Image 1 (cartoon, rainbow, N blue to C red):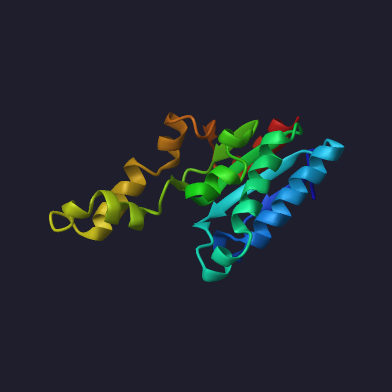
Image 2 (image 1 turned 90 degrees about the vertical axis):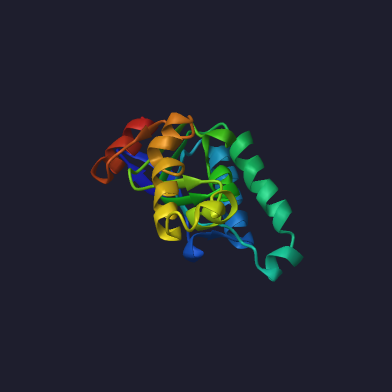
Length: 177
C-alpha cells in the first residue's frame, strides 16, 4: 500500500523477473478483490515478460488462477490505474490491469515495449523471411519501434497517454483524484 497525494492505494507490481506465475496471479487477484471490498484504488505497475510456461505451471491450476485475476479486475468497481513501466508481453499485459479488463486509466513510459509477443519471438514468427536482408537484431529493433512502442499502443487505444518518468507520481496522483 502507498499514499498518492493523500489517497491510499494498493500497488501491484511485477516480480519474479517479470513472469506472471501462479503465485503472482493469486496474490494480485486477492489484492484487487480485497481493495474492491473497501473501495481502495489499485495502481498496477507492469513490467512483465509474459506468462509462466514452466512444467510446474502446466501441471498446476494456473489457468484458473489467471481466470480469477481477470475476473478480479473486470468485476471490481474501485479505481484502477495501470502504468507500463517496462515490458508488457502477451496475456500478462492484458491480465495486469489493462484497459481490456477495466482500467480507468492506462499510462506508459516512453520506453515501454507493449506487444503480443516479445520482439524476438515476433520477428521469428512474422518477419523471419526478412532475416538475411537485415540482421535479426535490426529487425527486432524495428519491431520494437514500429509494432511494440508505447506510441503504437497509444494509437491502438491500449494506453491513454505516454508520460515521462519524472511525471509518474504526479500523473498517478491526478488519476486517483
